[in-house]
Amino acid sequence: MADAVVNKISTPPLSQRAKEEIQQYILKMDLKKGTKLPREEVMAQMLGVSRITVRKAFDDLAAEGIIFRRHGKGTFVNVDSLNMKVTFNPVMEFTQMIRKSGYVPSMKLLNLKFLHGHDKIREILHMPEEEKLIQADKAFFADDKLCVVSRDFYSISLAGGEDAFAQMSKYEQSVFPYIYEKSGRKLVWDKVEIDTAISTEIDGFSQYLKELKVGVRPYLYLREINYGEDDQPLIYVEEYIDTSIIKYNMIRQKEIRYSKMEGLEQ
Image 1 (cartoon, rainbow, N blue to C red):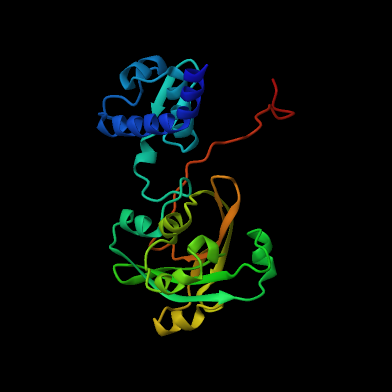
Image 2: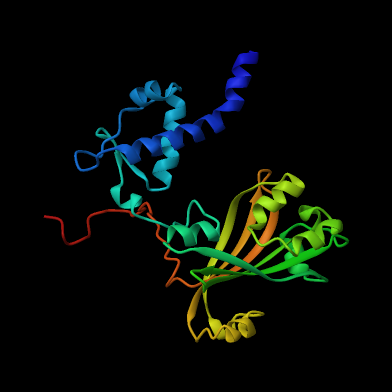
């Protein structure tokens, strides 16, 4: 019984490692000769894991559009997915997106402060009234050209308490590893609302954009609630993205009801 429990607990990270190994296998394939992957049982033997583990890895890769599963035919690599540099899912950090887009990334912390009030954000993050809320404004650059401005909101307790605030003001990297280092909390998924915004109308950033001589242009506007491993909301983020630099791609599964139209039946 003890062995069964250990195996069950270790399955999720094992399937993740299997997924990574399968991705490496795909990168080494000669896709001009064929895109079909080995059967589940064969791949399981190659990796030294169970067939269930491989099936979970295949399911994850299929959900991301990296492979296609054809009933009765097998599992195939989606060649188009290998050419996509930046995807909506899984999400990357902006510096990684910029680098994958072919530019040298850099980041600048524009503003870091405590906020009073903001009951709506506190409610989103399930924060008590006495807990201090931090706002961090950042700018991301691709080859020194501005491509993203973002605003993060999170609790001071996630950032190591008030004693760590001065240290945070000098930290110009992704906030996610910083929060993990200080609180042990990992960000694992998010919920996103997608909109658009004009550069001159971006609240709190318009003067900065003017100083950089950014002309009037549209931005992709994302509002995100980032959740931890316990599915609790940890960070609320507003992001404005120049899609002429960061070009998102996505492979989507179709859910269409196909039926014969009246009048067309013979």
